[in-house]
Structures are given as C-alpha cells and as structure tokens.
Length: 140
Image 1 (cartoon, rainbow, N blue to C red):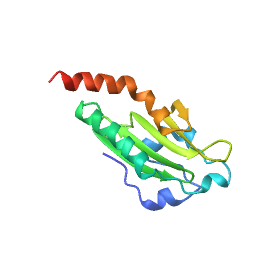
Image 2: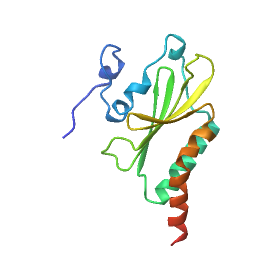
Image 3: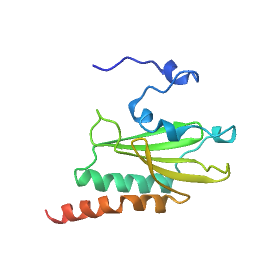
Image 4: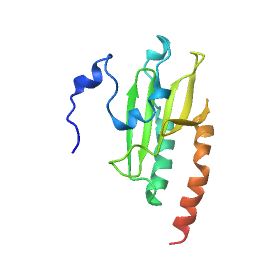
C-alpha cells in the first residue's frame, strides 16, 4: 500500500520531498538563490500548448494522467503512463540560471533532455512522439 503523508511533510523546508514524481527530477529542481524563490507559473497559452500535446498523446494511448505542481522558482507539468508510476516526462518552467528571465526544461526521469528559453523549442523534443501518435490515429 502507499505511505500516509500529511501536508506538513511538504511544507517543512528541512524535510526532503516525498512525492515520487518530484523525487524523479529533484536534482534539477534546486532553487537558485533568493531570486529563484519568486513565484513561477505557466501562463494560459503555455498551459494550452502543454494540454494540446497531452491530449494528442492520450488519444494515441501513450499517456494516461498528468499533474501540475509549483515549487519555489518553478512550475512543473508531469505526464504519466499510469497514475501509479513516476512520470514519463516533466516540463519545468523555471528562472534561468542567470537569474533573469525564464527557461523551460524537459526531464526524462532525473535526466535533463532539453532546455530552451522558448516553450515551443522545448516541445520540439516531443516531435517524434507526436508523429507516431498522428500515424496511429490515421490508421483507424
């Protein structure tokens, strides 16, 4: 069965994150200084593009679930094959390493596979997956 956790476990800054999908990318999620503690979130158009990609993959049978999370200095969009696994991919919007502006990063487990200032450029990482989904949908 699963462990019982309380919200206090997540609020305490001294404790490590316990959720599986955040543990999968924890190395890339370290806040950078005080500037990184500012609130970061996906705007409407970014979230719409992420949901469009997600819906294509759901229709193709690749993905089954998603989660949206916020950490200090970061916003995360995680996608899953099932609700009981770690995420297949996590798209993170975070404050750039320079401390100015935003950057988007795609994680495949703990491994960073794409990083760019533009969400459109980062989502090009999923083009092969999108092509296979389009091919599969045309075959019906």
